[in-house]
Structures are given as structure tokens and as C-alpha cells.
Image (cartoon, rainbow, N blue to C red; front, side, top):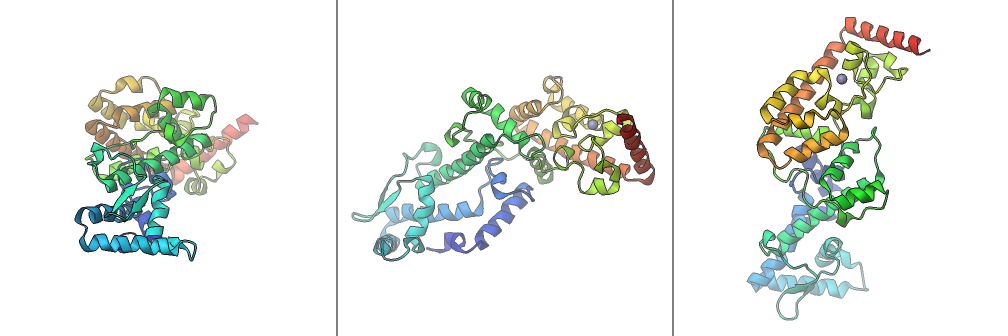
Length: 354
Ligand SMILES: [Zn+2]
């Protein structure tokens, strides 16, 4: 009976395993665990363990017998520890502590068989099952808390979550957008219930991971990392440059300043011209691309493709091509000749600015 969620009580052990598992699945290594939630319907191991424990109540009520008697005993053990020693050290106490965060008034009764109160009306979508309903409410609750925290923190352009902040606004209600523009406090219940991508795409895993990393702000873009640490070591002049957040391709080839961002790459950088043309030909989404490069436009693109398997597959492949083109360009830029040429261009610019 303890087995399904014993890892939750161990100091860190279970949770660390879960963290590695989720980061590996989503490709969001390097991010905090709460930043991995909400992108896809993937459920984490800790939640699955908790849901398995909740299912024990359902099975005990249905099959009664030995399982029913065991649950009755566990409830009695918990009741007997009240006021005597830490009730959360009992199975029932540990479970209720977690469950009550989702359903604050949930209680189990044992006087005439197993029954419970404080659970919401079970919905058809969750097949009228207590554990499925709990699973649904648990993951939606976590995602909504994550969103309200993010929306209330109003991230700046140099922060990872800047794009997600705009995406939630585009996907949210008019009321939500109104409150954000008035700088009002956002409640968790006012945010999205469904994940960003309600169904997993059928494209290869690596492409989808790169797309998720790009949207989560974890790919290598200077808007966040100012070309540190690798490119600053290769091109030391970037240290002193006011253009240290610039797209180096546009700077090197056209002496133009664009902040090196995901939306600049996806919508306008000439480095990505060929994959972009292919993507537009394949998806017929030119209307979105005609509006130019902005964080809002990238959010609109995601809103358009998120529930369409074919378009989402194409976008994930495009995201992988964007990364490959950028990596190839940075590699070329690290050759001795181009390194010196970039240094000269940066030097001339600094001289010009003085
Ligand atoms: Zn560029």
C-alpha cells in the first residue's frame, strides 16, 4: 500500500528521479521542474504515484474484502495518531496532506463501507473515476499556479519565460489580457486549463524537444545569454560591445542590429531564409509571416499550429533546422579568418560610436 507513493516521502530521492525523467522526456534539461509543466500532457512520476494511491479508495469501495479492511485500518491508524504524534507519518495522513492541496475538503469515511466526501462531481471525460478526476485536477492545478506566478512576475525580454508570458496571453481570454494590461493581480483560476500542446506530435522526438526548448527560452539565443559563455570566449571583443545581444549574422553581413531572439530567427533573419521558405510552402501560413518579426507573432504562430498535428510536425522540424543553421553559422564564425574579421568590425563600430 505504501509502495505507490513511498518515494514522495523519501528525502529528495523520488523527486530527483522524477525530475530527471521529466527533463529527459521534454528535453528541458537545465530548467526548474515547474518550468517543464504545461507544455504537453505528459504526467510526472510523482503525480502518477499519488494517483495510484488515490485509486486504492476506489478499489476498496468496489471490491471491499481484504483491501476494504486494510483501508479501514489505515484510516483508524490515522485517526488514532491525531493529537498524539505526527499524523502525516501514517499512510492516510501522508496521502491527505497531498490530496488536500487539490481537494481541500476531501475525507474518507469507514462507518458503512468505504465512502468519501469533498471530491468534486466526477466528470464523464474522466470516466467518472475518482483517481482520474484527481489526476486531471492535480495537473491542471499545477499548470495554473505556474501560469499565474509567471503572469504576475511580468518577465522582461532578457528572461527565459518572456515568450511563454506572451503565449499565455494570446491563448487566454480577453478578460485575462485586460487584467494584464491594467497590471492587475492574476488568479490561478483565470488561466488556461489545457496544456500548450494538448496532443503529442508524431514528428521525431529530437525535433519536438528542440521546439519545446526554443519556446521555453532554453536554446542558445543572445537575448538571454548575451553570447556567453562560449562565443564570448571565442570573440572577446563581444565583452565590451554594446551589440552583445545582437544577431551576429545580421551584424557581420549587413551591419544591422537585431536582438538575437527566437522570433528574429523564425521570422526575419536571412540566415534561416531557405528553411523558412520551405516551411511556408508546406504549411501555407504566409499570412502570419507577412506580419514581420515580433514575440506576439511567434505566439500567434504557436496558437495556430498547436492543435493541428501536421502543422505542429512541420514547425518542430523547422525548429530543428533553425538550430542546425545557427550552429553551423557559429562554427563558421569561429574560424580564424572570420574571428579576426568580426573583431575588426566590432572595433570599427566602437571607434565610430566614440
Ligand atoms: Zn539575424
